[in-house]
Image (cartoon, rainbow, N blue to C red; front, side):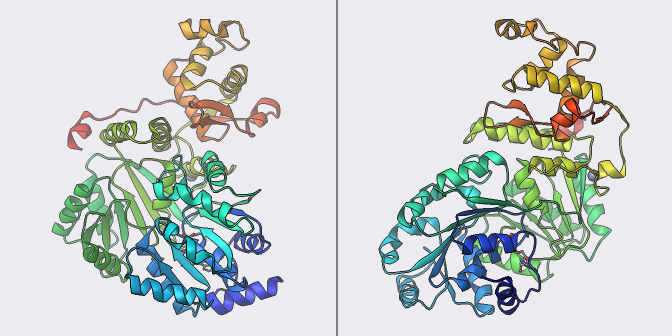
Length: 514
Ligand code: ADP
Ligand code: ZN
């Protein structure tokens, strides 16, 4: 396929002049018949990566999508572009379903959206169709390591066995490495080519504030920009309703949105927001997936999010038009305790707790927040962003190269198999049972950091993680491992700037208030 034909199709069917980063490469890869894993941030333009190939391939493209509500929107917008598409799911009557099945058989339809639950009863139908491509949207839902596991997704591994020669394109905005690997394995992808688009969204400002008096802070924030719409994410349904009510009382046009509300009310609220008839949505994370509103000017997190993936996806709903947009996260100790409780009772407790810990570290960070976010997604950025609260109001830095060298050497000596507390004990020369049992006291660098307190080391190590020199292996008992960038500090003389440690005082008041 020459590039000119792809560009012509892009223009003719979607009205776009240029591809966004990675779209063209992904499309070419899919068209060559290769299994592909595409990782792109929310709003990055994943849909075209399967919609355009669907127009080129002779047969049908199956799109697996988790949300029935989303399918209709996607199909409607394809039809508006003159592309024949349909969906098949449990919301339809038998007659409707039969109608679309006939159209599929007569090869009129290019794209069919299917919920994973519906696959089994369509198996017979597949015998009489030519299937050219299988796209799996929100592919992280297959992995219990991701942040949005859906049991129905676990059956999708069957697709590769059923259609061994049909390429599969898996798409997700969740990028952590372990989840990526899990997705490929569970879908039985064959040597998938992996594309990771940059997650940097420079137009989003990043800010974290203490949650003290957050309702008042939010009201002040909104009143400053009466014509700009935004989303406030809350942890509980109850909070969304209470907050919306408080905002309404001050004259703000706000509404609550959560999965417990009637479908009609939900879609009405959603439409009002999209059409700028409602300024503020107070929502649980149920709101946003698939909502294509480009001029959301700000996103506030009323509560601490569960993990960085979710947080990044949610703030990503602001500023899709590329214009400057604000994000504010309220950090509260009370939220943290509550989230820890949820995580420890849920599926995959250890991993979820570790992810929550990273979220907390982000909120407590003393270095450029964008660097932290991007390093979480595996991108190393050397420049500070200039568009986060830390960059705008920097803490005091000192040359922490020696501290960094000691810490990174300790991690090497401990063969990258120990978690943070053991590394700190080792650096400080602790004489505890575990150290002696492993005979760590005989290794080089044992106790080279005895001059610093446990608290200081903890803070410095977190800073080194946030700077991208080492990482926590969530799926391997939280072992601390070095990244490829560690060698710059250890062997190439790179200087490391650290921040003086401040004790973060948590106001007792705030715990009561939440
Ligand atoms: P994602 O699924 O990755 O969140 P979408 O596929 O919904 O993203 O695309 C996000 C927005 O970007 C949509 O409004 C879409 O029309 C637009 N878009 C996608 N590709 C392009 C492009 N090449 N040029 C301009 N706009 C694009
Ligand atoms: Zn910054």
